Image (cartoon, rainbow over all chains, first blue to last red; front, side):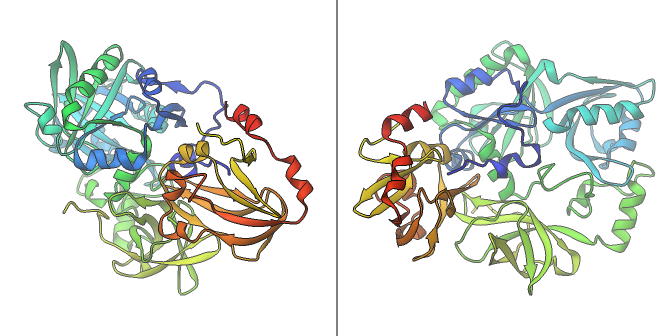
Length: 374
Length: 125
């Protein structure tokens, strides 16, 4: 038997022997708790502690905590920061009041996705961009190349850590949670932290950022406080199944520099009424002509092999697309995924076939999300 | 980790139980614990012939698909249909009800190349 972590690691896969995998400030906590560590986007990260399914259920039913210290934290500051960022990002940053965040995209000149991120307005002219680990350097370089002189751009990633605490019982864990998509600076046990009501799981929850030196203490305080709520430390494995059930995209799998947000079905986070932002012309055209391919969620018809990234999609024996994310949904106990499919076939309810090791298995294109709380 | 001393092993984490001129094959406790959450098993076809180290079955967990190899040259004479309905048997009883297939061995001498429990224990540390 050969162990292949193909699904989770996707295009970021690096050999375990590759030197210089970075460690988050919580690395030793993960190892101490028996987590299985895997390389991900240049970091050694926990893929699971006990079981992906158990950790997934902890988040759906109680609370789970993820180390997200590998994610990049960029700071943009200056009187022109707001107007400049609005030319770099697709969503309308003018809609943010101080203390509010929004999901948005950083595009290249061809409208392709460099990264998807959350931009928080943490001061009058100050923003925190939380970006994908694999893209931090590229985002920083891209922003740096376009930065006007009166805007400061900083990368605080090396000095900060972060966790996501997610699940319906998060509101029992903290008092005075910020409003949805808002971020507040608070103190917990003497530690200065930023707490945002955001997440990547479809459950209520927070993402918390703190100076690196507080990471271990914060992690253990929360695990202790959450004991009675059934809190579990969770790995990237369940992070992936949770986000996929909600059809939240994963950059590098569902998004890439060759795909734009309209094709990805994420036009909601693009404000084409803004006069100018990088990639706007291409997106206008895509919107006008309709994308040639669309990212759609699907569900297998029968209980068969789970769909996986790169499997081919067929309709009437014609190849019409490719799976970008796929797994067995732990909530549904059923094979689900997302695929780019040529537009005429990308209709909710359409029957498709997924090819698994040379054999075709029927599936149906579904509406987002694939999992709804009952 | 459980490594029974009456079985043979492969480097690729299959266990082998001798039953006359046949061998029963599954994946080890170590392998199932690495995979966790087995959700699907693709069994080999009955009567198919397989060469040593040929991938003839697939065990899929939530996160990945892993090939299962024929340890030696032979013919598939039995498959564990119970795994179709309950793939989790591999996690719960890797050396028992979680067996995957039975091979009729072409040449019993080929079994000499397999590891004993001590060698496998050393491999998985």
